[in-house]
Picture 1 (cartoon, rainbow, N blue to C red):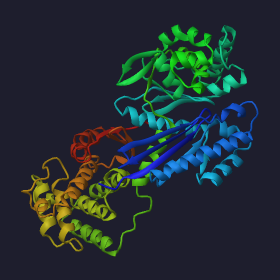
Picture 2: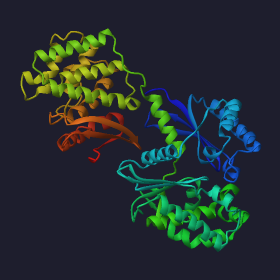
Picture 3: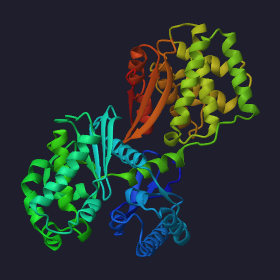
Picture 4: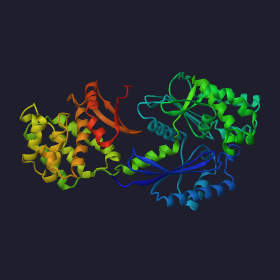
Length: 514
């Protein structure tokens, strides 16, 4: 196993600045270590006068300086810090970013609304997993309400509404008790913007809708619903019943009644009205809460980059000679060139995109290519048991550049390229390997098996693969020309070895033709 990488994410929102520190063992194995929240309400002044005050500058520098100390304490080597709605709108945001960098050595990135929505969306998809695709993601923050309507994890409709909780209580002057006329004003603001920005109107019914952010977490405790797919939910029917009680209390009374912080108590009434209005517009009765957001999306991307190879593969002379010799031998025994080369190309696409999971060095990639080129050479001897015949040829034939350990690994790949045989100590190639090389052979065979299955028809229909990571799963989105049903069906059956080796589930998706 690779050494863990200590990573961190900072989200400077409109209501507070939050830090998450994690220990990443791979792109799929991220262990939370520490979280902190600093009550720096960046949106308090910006939404009235579009610039940060000197007090915000000082308190912001203090918050980020503290976060830097925490990150150093945990040995963080990779981080990303982002600022959202309030900082986007501050006319002096460049000076704020400069001051943060000067005082803390933290580079703060002001991201777009689209990027903010994407990070939250990626975090949700990873948290729910491929078996529980959400239809709607609603992220209510201090500055905005981000809405994504999804179909098969792709955004079908999206909208960013300037109705964040801090923005509304500041611009409408609603610091405490909210009277019925004021509540109706908030509802009309939200409804009008929904009708102008989210058209046509989605009718989601019983679809899975998730809500992100501290506002949703607070209201789910006030109006809890039955768990959905293992997730806490916010019951909108119950929230509507309890709304008058929330609105009639002042901030201090809400803090006491609902056991919340002051900076959550003052916005929870507006948040409740907003979620109820959104729920009615989308025809929803509840929101599920995955407990993730922008920071989790950041951590996933940092981990993926930390364990992915970013520089191009440049083979040395020996590696290039190995491939030249392998191709030369394959031609001599009459291999099916188009199929073998296509399987080789699919194999290296998988190897490169799954680097964050398998962590194998570049030379393993060369051996994978060699195994792909040789995988069907056993047909020269007999179609029946060709995987065994191919193994024998790879072990004993004159293949320039393929020697010793490399030869045994390539031969094992040929033996295990399909589901006819599982790695075993009684097989010639596998038994010839040192114990440290046997996992390499198994893992490369797991990749090759999927690549070969993706061209099961020998018609080169699947042209490109795009890999994404979700909770305990790898999702392979395949782009094909024509009907690739046969290839995908075989790939699903051939994924078992990969799932066993990497302790993840593999899902295949083919986008609908546009």
